[in-house]
Length: 191
Image 1: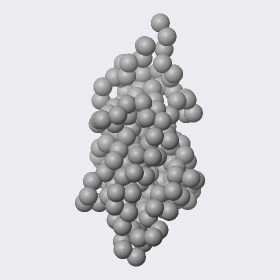
Image 2 (image 1 turned 45 degrees about the vertical axis):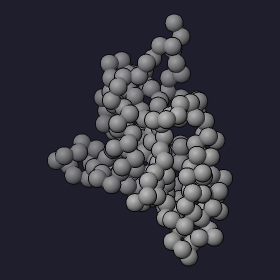
Image 3 (image 1 turned 90 degrees about the vertical axis):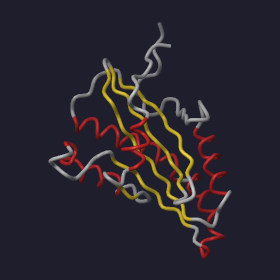
Image 4 (image 1 turned 120 degrees about the vertical axis):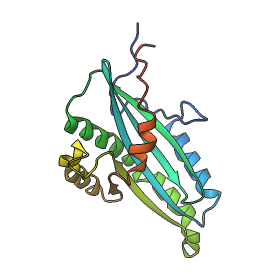
């Protein structure tokens, strides 16, 4: 039996959403540009966030990408990465989650974000804008969140990238809501 590719930061960048399967990164960027072009005079938020869930024999990571037009809808997709062991360290899980979000954010750094901004630029005086966030699935409240000890370290990593603002719970929607929704079922490790 053949195993699917397991935890590789650069292996197949394949994305899915509720209506489409097996989207390439280029497909994702084109869908996002199409979404923006439908209403280029609006403000937009690009959100990237990863969550994980430990299952028997593996840990499933899901990275969500959302382009949101506040009050007027969104387009989203996700990528799944499977690590073939059960992670028990909260810091290790949070570090990998942040790294996976940063990896996807790096793919948007150059041409993709520039193309989004080019669509919006003629409408900037009519309200067009683009904010970019990396959502970290961590909270700052020590009593509630085991991750609180590592929040500042992860925020510093994201902010060092330059373009992206870091958000944590309860504002980290891409990680703590969208990606989280897709981590619940165990991954199919055998093809």
